[in-house]
Image (tube, helix red, strand yellow):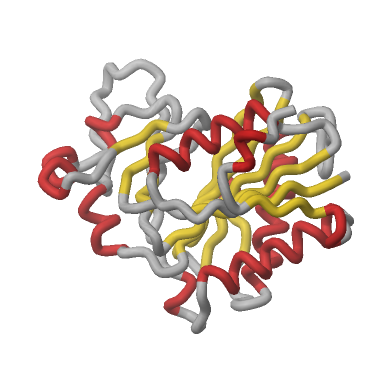
Length: 236
C-alpha cells in the first residue's frame, strides 16, 4: 500500500471543502490518503445539524464569519488557523482495525493520539471518539462511508482562539422539542494543546505522520506528497 499525503497550503474554507469532496471521489484502491489542512475563521456543522440552533447567528453576521456544512456527521466546530484538521480516507473493504466502522474510526484516532503523546503525554481517547487532556477536549472527529470509501476527519485544537470559539458557537443548543431527529452537539470544555507544551503545528503534523507510517507499515519511498493542485489533475 501507498500513502498519498495531501498538504496543500491554503486557508480558504471553500477551497478546502472542495478538496475534501475530491478526496472522497478520487480515493485509490492501492492507497491511503492522509491530509493536513487549516482554515481561516469559519463555523462547520455536521451533516444533520441546523445552524440556527447551533450558532450565534447575530455574532457571526456581525463578524462576517461563514458557515459550512460537511458531508460527515458529528457536531459543530469552529475553525481558524490555530487548529489542525486531519483527514484520512481508504477503501471501505481495506480493514485496518475492525469491520465495525466506529471501532475502525477509533483506531485512526489512536494513531493521532500516539503522535500527540510524543509532545504531551497526558491525553487520552474518551467518549464520542474524541481526545481529551484531563476533562478538556482538544480533538473531535467525524466519519462517513460513501462511494465505497471510509472517510474520517478530525479537528485538533493547537493554538486556536478559544474566546472567539465560545462567542461563535451556542454553548447550549437551542433545538425546539418538536424538531425532528436533530443531531445535537455535545458541548465539552475545550483547551489548546499549546497551553501545555511549546510546539508548532508543523511539529504536530510531523509526529502524527510518523505514527501513521509506522502503524500502516508504509516506507518513506511509498509516500506521494502533494502540496499543490496537482492533486486534482491526478484523478486516474
